[in-house]
Image (cartoon, rainbow, N blue to C red; front, side, top):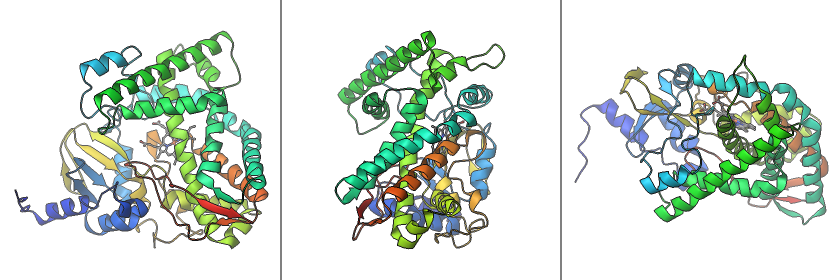
Length: 422
Ligand code: HEM
């Protein structure tokens, strides 16, 4: 049957622009800004995607409007399955705790306020700053291995994924050797929500997710008996009056931390390396100029935010920039698109290291859910790039290397950064 043309031209435009949101198409992956964001800003800042049943909010002002009002635009349903889990799958999951208590991402005030307060007592700026020498050691060791190895490198595989994995392990207090298993269990967790995985695959994934929880429950038990200088021990100590975190709440935080802080940091380093190595002069200068490295990092966060969007759900009917939105609707909040809004970032397609408004990018989100790990991420990136630059001053992109990104709905992760030294 032919689709019936919409009688309302504005509505038709919203649908047409919403149709440009094709996160799994190669054109979109290569450049979401040119294939969707710029069009959305010009034609329909609040578009609608019938494919994803979602309102797509893209202007800087509208994204801020959504982030400013968590009572209206809720995060509580973020980890709810779109299709309810089958009874057999649910029974498997309930061998562990399912659902896990709401953590940080998937929570609203007042529960979120309490969770963030308690979490912040453990994950403090002092704890992050104290990690700098350790991060420098990890980064220098990795860079030295690269300097001693073959001249052809793939920096996502050889560096950007390795560094945050080491950092998260050290932060949380997990033996580094266990990290591949934890990552596999995290992938199991995501498989539960993946419509392309069959029932047998989901049952196996449920066992993985339960094993993941047991792993952390055991580790928490060990730290309770014998505290160490790590985040788990600090979470166990965190108090607000009489209040403290339960073991299940801690597990909830820990499983989120791995995915929140691992791929995101690797992605940022990968995108930044494309920018720095793309211009030999820039690579040379960032060795001596920390401010320049910082400007390049922030501009990369603007143009290639690792987290391009997060969904919110309306708790009542509302309107955004004149577009009516019913209660219970999914509102995709595009940090990535807001970062290309010419009202805030003139000439947004240009990589500009002197932007007066550069700090207003939403690469780390904004508001009550803004990234708790932003200072750790910035530290890792700075120290990581400095170590690479020191060990490999003549690093450059491989002949013909061009930016390409992995297919993903929410994330922007370079598929590979092929490079050569010497
Ligand atoms: C939240 C991005 C690294 C922990 C967020 C949000 C964004 C983001 C956009 C907001 C999500 C929303 O509003 O729904 C990034 C990027 C990173 C990074 C681009 C790296 C370059 C990290 C690291 C950690 C971390 C290293 C911790 C070790 C968190 C947590 C939240 C969060 C716990 C949830 C806060 C809340 O809901 O209250 N991050 N992140 N992130 N991030 Fe990050």
